[in-house]
Length: 260
Length: 311
Ligand SMILES: Nc1ncnc2c1ncn2[C@@H]1O[C@H](COP(=O)(O)OP(=O)(O)OP(=O)(O)O)[C@@H](O)[C@H]1O
Ligand SMILES: [Mg+2]
Image (cartoon, rainbow over all chains, first blue to last red; front, side, top):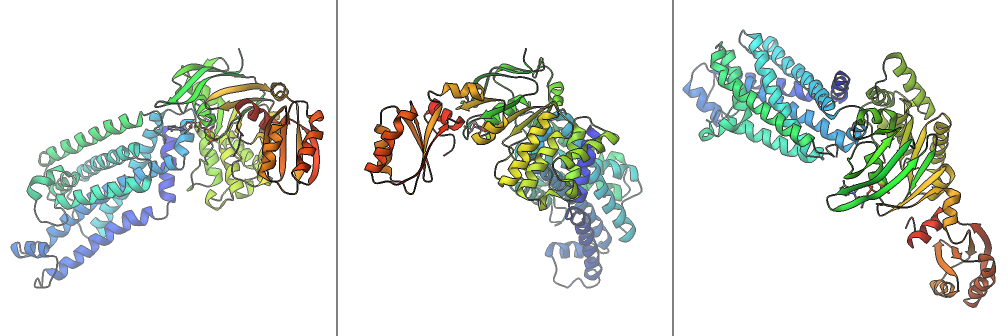
């Protein structure tokens, strides 16, 4: 049963024409652009560009490489969060289209159904994330370090957090547009506060409260070839966040008419 | 014990009571109609029955099994056609039907066979690979039904399956319902169209403000009405002064006006025709046609509640 539901949710994701190009194409083209921009900026740093980028460029010669590395890591985390939004909007769509109501009238347990979707969406998100990692590695020379296993573990944890956060929203909201709007806002604000894309500091520690920070720091550490101990705290924080979101979502989905 | 049994079922939304102490029984092989105006509590009753909502009190048994103690077992026996269209826009007709049937545990070649059968039965086989987005209203309604019947349930529960479609599609659906019943399914059919319920159902429950106000065979219900016939008058035009005058006539209980047709419920209609005609001509109204007709469920609803089934 769970597998059947998972397969269906993957199918729906793939059948939706905009999801794939958006989720893989966009981050790839952004990373590509940033890399190109760096190549231009570094030889002629007088050029008027993003002031914060310039600042970094002056301070640290030859940072071009690290810059695009951080961008790649930060964008990856952001896009995993965005896929989480997509996954949850598919679930909210099921409420709006009343298919969730129909499903709950069939002999399948609510838990089985949610887990099936969770499984399908996670697998889909993993495919997206791994595609981004592999393509940037081989086509754009982004160095993701040499521990594929740890990259995989960090990626799975970020996905876990992203999707359970999405499901919290899916459990509470009935209108995909509203939920999407709020979640996108949350992700954009978090990405900004995390400093991962802007490099203008930690906002007086506010970055501690973003999912992005804990995710991309872990990637950066792995990129630099650091060991597990360097990212232990990141892993713990991500895991704790994921578990917290799971509990909230589980509680919200227990409502009698959670299908509405 | 009856095949389906609702015993003193109560369902509230917050403080509002939507199903008010309903008890009824349905026998195997019946087409049971649940008739009531908008907001009467039909959908809520059905949702409790299919396990989408939990009743606040009362018990429901399906084939002797309590839906609270073994919900998966009772759900497996049923196929639910929701009032609102409920399928995936992103999946084809075939994929939709196959997916929902698979949730009832149908697998493999059997799944394919039953899916094709449901497609053929609802006349969607030619369109099976198309997405429902492109379907007409009638086709969407048929797909909505197909998704609920592919697993060949013993009990098919349809919540207003014909709302908002053309007469041709409606007839197609009504005939399908009869055919499903012939093939052995027990059917619960909700509607606020009394013609549908009258032509389709063996037994009818009339529900209003969450209460079951009458229940039985059509003939039994008709006996509830004080009169078995009504006077039907067609006119060229109508004026409302005349309605007041007609209501003054001794024995007249209710008058329904629709376009230029008056339905007059009265005791002893045969003896009142003369008086009615005199009243009309006194008001200068030309009568095109006058007849006596058997009271229908609409008339019964009116007598029982003093209101019309539809506005
Ligand atoms: N989710 C809900 N929350 C609160 N009240 C509700 C809810 N659903 C229905 N109601 C109320 O319960 C009552 C019964 O509604 P129900 O949908 O069962 O009626 P119905 O007979 O199916 O009407 P219709 O012909 O319009 O479908 C109505 O007064 C309605 O406003
Ligand atoms: Mg209804």
